[in-house]
Image 1 (cartoon, rainbow, N blue to C red):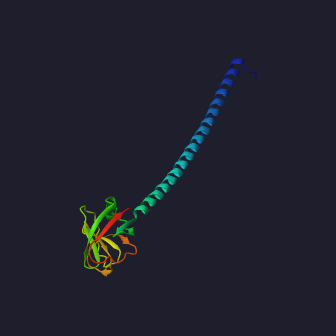
Image 2 (cartoon, rainbow, N blue to C red):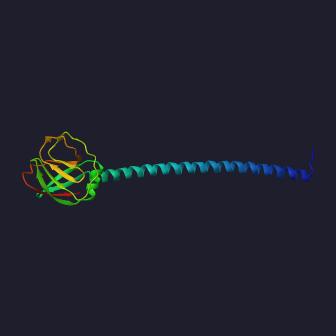
Length: 178
């Protein structure tokens, strides 16, 4: 029933060591859970800010797209609003602006100019041209149609001029600007 002093000290050291190991295990587990919690919060905030950044980027991209989806053309000193297509032809055309052209009459329904720069094409047969359409014929000929008619020719659509009036006979001066 009685232990000697050395045995008691050994038992205390052993229990103390066991207690320390248990304490360290509990503390280690707590630290691990804390680290996981911090990692979770970090990843969640990272995802939140990435979403926020993406939304901002998309908003900025939409603003940029909206700003390049429209332009003006001044024809014989009258300004017209142009709604642009979303294609490679338009992107390249916009890079070349501002440009002023003398456009020649053709067929009593269109004005055209051959540019020095080629543009990318994706020509289709529209079957019908509407007054106000701006088209690319081939890869260098910009055409403004001022009368509506049916066609079997191939064009790449650039855009449409709203409320275009009859441009009459003869050449015109057209300034395209962003």
